[in-house]
Image (cartoon, rainbow, N blue to C red; front, side, top):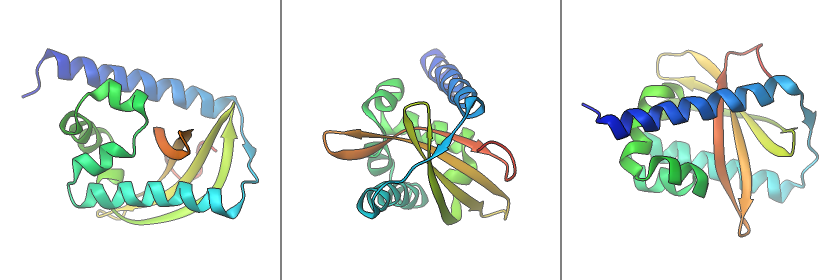
Length: 148
Protein backbone atom coordinates (compact mmCIF):
# COMPACT_ATOMS: atom_id res chain seq x y z
CA UNK A 1 0.00 0.00 0.00
CA UNK A 2 1.27 3.46 -0.90
CA UNK A 3 1.74 6.14 1.74
CA UNK A 4 0.69 9.80 1.53
CA UNK A 5 3.98 10.81 -0.11
CA UNK A 6 3.53 8.20 -2.83
CA UNK A 7 -0.03 9.33 -3.50
CA UNK A 8 1.17 12.93 -3.77
CA UNK A 9 3.84 11.89 -6.26
CA UNK A 10 1.27 10.13 -8.42
CA UNK A 11 -0.95 13.26 -8.33
CA UNK A 12 2.01 15.40 -9.36
CA UNK A 13 2.73 13.01 -12.23
CA UNK A 14 -0.89 13.31 -13.34
CA UNK A 15 -0.61 17.10 -13.42
CA UNK A 16 2.58 16.88 -15.48
CA UNK A 17 0.84 14.57 -17.93
CA UNK A 18 -2.12 16.93 -18.24
CA UNK A 19 0.20 19.85 -18.96
CA UNK A 20 2.05 17.82 -21.58
CA UNK A 21 -1.25 16.78 -23.19
CA UNK A 22 -2.24 20.45 -23.43
CA UNK A 23 0.98 21.17 -25.28
CA UNK A 24 0.11 18.39 -27.74
CA UNK A 25 -3.15 20.14 -28.60
CA UNK A 26 -1.48 23.54 -29.14
CA UNK A 27 0.37 22.49 -32.29
CA UNK A 28 3.32 20.68 -33.72
CA UNK A 29 5.81 20.89 -36.54
CA UNK A 30 8.10 18.26 -38.02
CA UNK A 31 11.77 18.28 -37.02
CA UNK A 32 14.67 17.77 -39.37
CA UNK A 33 17.30 16.36 -37.02
CA UNK A 34 20.44 14.75 -38.33
CA UNK A 35 20.65 10.96 -38.33
CA UNK A 36 23.04 10.94 -35.36
CA UNK A 37 20.63 12.88 -33.16
CA UNK A 38 17.66 10.76 -34.27
CA UNK A 39 19.63 7.61 -33.52
CA UNK A 40 20.70 8.89 -30.10
CA UNK A 41 17.10 9.73 -29.16
CA UNK A 42 15.83 6.35 -30.35
CA UNK A 43 18.62 4.58 -28.48
CA UNK A 44 17.66 6.23 -25.17
CA UNK A 45 14.01 5.27 -25.56
CA UNK A 46 14.83 1.72 -26.70
CA UNK A 47 17.20 1.18 -23.80
CA UNK A 48 14.62 2.43 -21.30
CA UNK A 49 11.97 0.11 -22.79
CA UNK A 50 14.42 -2.79 -22.48
CA UNK A 51 15.09 -1.86 -18.85
CA UNK A 52 11.34 -1.86 -18.11
CA UNK A 53 10.99 -5.32 -19.67
CA UNK A 54 13.76 -6.58 -17.34
CA UNK A 55 12.31 -4.81 -14.28
CA UNK A 56 15.57 -2.87 -14.06
CA UNK A 57 14.29 0.26 -12.35
CA UNK A 58 17.73 1.75 -11.73
CA UNK A 59 18.60 1.71 -15.44
CA UNK A 60 15.14 2.90 -16.56
CA UNK A 61 15.23 5.73 -14.01
CA UNK A 62 18.67 6.75 -15.31
CA UNK A 63 17.19 7.69 -18.70
CA UNK A 64 14.73 10.12 -17.09
CA UNK A 65 15.55 13.82 -16.89
CA UNK A 66 16.66 15.26 -13.55
CA UNK A 67 13.24 16.91 -13.23
CA UNK A 68 11.46 13.55 -13.53
CA UNK A 69 13.96 11.94 -11.17
CA UNK A 70 13.36 14.73 -8.69
CA UNK A 71 9.58 14.24 -8.84
CA UNK A 72 9.82 10.52 -8.04
CA UNK A 73 12.94 10.43 -5.94
CA UNK A 74 13.72 6.73 -6.28
CA UNK A 75 13.71 4.12 -9.04
CA UNK A 76 11.11 2.16 -7.04
CA UNK A 77 8.55 5.01 -7.02
CA UNK A 78 9.28 5.67 -10.68
CA UNK A 79 8.74 2.02 -11.63
CA UNK A 80 5.50 1.88 -9.64
CA UNK A 81 4.19 4.94 -11.49
CA UNK A 82 5.09 3.42 -14.86
CA UNK A 83 3.49 0.06 -13.97
CA UNK A 84 0.24 1.75 -12.95
CA UNK A 85 0.02 4.60 -15.43
CA UNK A 86 1.86 3.33 -18.48
CA UNK A 87 1.30 -0.43 -18.81
CA UNK A 88 2.02 -0.36 -22.56
CA UNK A 89 5.38 1.27 -21.86
CA UNK A 90 6.16 -0.99 -18.92
CA UNK A 91 5.54 -4.18 -20.89
CA UNK A 92 5.68 -3.38 -24.58
CA UNK A 93 6.34 -6.21 -26.99
CA UNK A 94 7.23 -3.99 -29.93
CA UNK A 95 8.15 -0.40 -30.68
CA UNK A 96 7.95 1.34 -34.06
CA UNK A 97 9.57 4.75 -34.20
CA UNK A 98 7.79 7.50 -36.11
CA UNK A 99 9.10 10.95 -36.98
CA UNK A 100 10.31 13.62 -34.59
CA UNK A 101 8.12 16.65 -33.91
CA UNK A 102 8.44 19.81 -31.90
CA UNK A 103 5.79 21.03 -29.53
CA UNK A 104 6.64 24.53 -28.48
CA UNK A 105 10.39 24.35 -27.94
CA UNK A 106 10.41 20.66 -27.03
CA UNK A 107 11.45 17.75 -29.23
CA UNK A 108 8.99 14.86 -29.24
CA UNK A 109 9.75 11.34 -30.47
CA UNK A 110 6.59 9.43 -31.35
CA UNK A 111 6.65 5.65 -30.93
CA UNK A 112 3.92 3.12 -31.65
CA UNK A 113 4.00 0.65 -28.76
CA UNK A 114 2.21 -2.68 -28.84
CA UNK A 115 1.51 -4.23 -25.45
CA UNK A 116 1.55 -7.89 -24.54
CA UNK A 117 -2.26 -7.71 -24.79
CA UNK A 118 -1.92 -6.54 -28.43
CA UNK A 119 -3.34 -3.06 -27.86
CA UNK A 120 -1.40 -0.25 -29.50
CA UNK A 121 -0.77 3.30 -28.35
CA UNK A 122 1.38 6.13 -29.57
CA UNK A 123 3.85 7.15 -26.90
CA UNK A 124 4.98 10.74 -27.32
CA UNK A 125 8.35 11.02 -25.59
CA UNK A 126 9.43 14.54 -24.67
CA UNK A 127 13.20 14.66 -25.01
CA UNK A 128 15.73 17.03 -23.49
CA UNK A 129 19.46 17.21 -24.12
CA UNK A 130 21.34 17.61 -20.84
CA UNK A 131 25.14 17.78 -20.71
CA UNK A 132 25.34 16.28 -24.20
CA UNK A 133 23.02 13.34 -23.41
CA UNK A 134 19.40 12.90 -24.45
CA UNK A 135 17.06 12.26 -21.53
CA UNK A 136 13.32 11.58 -21.34
CA UNK A 137 11.50 14.51 -19.75
CA UNK A 138 7.94 13.22 -20.13
CA UNK A 139 5.68 10.81 -21.98
CA UNK A 140 2.08 11.09 -23.10
CA UNK A 141 0.13 8.11 -24.44
CA UNK A 142 -2.53 8.60 -27.12
CA UNK A 143 -4.60 6.16 -29.13
CA UNK A 144 -3.63 5.84 -32.80
CA UNK A 145 -5.43 8.55 -34.77
CA UNK A 146 -5.46 11.00 -31.83
CA UNK A 147 -2.93 13.66 -30.88
CA UNK A 148 0.05 14.42 -33.10
